[in-house]
Image (cartoon, rainbow, N blue to C red):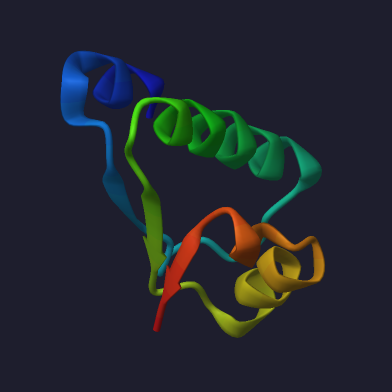
Length: 70
């Protein structure tokens, strides 16, 4: 993710449809990438999150720093 962002893309769309579990380590990766994108005028969009993964993102308030797309 960071390589894509640092290569000048600035924004990205992540397809999480195959992700069944999101740990605190995964949240940290998303946080670092979202902060980097924000500092460089970009945004991280997340699509296809399964209900259990979406719940983790919402409960941890990541829906405030990421754009969640159904």
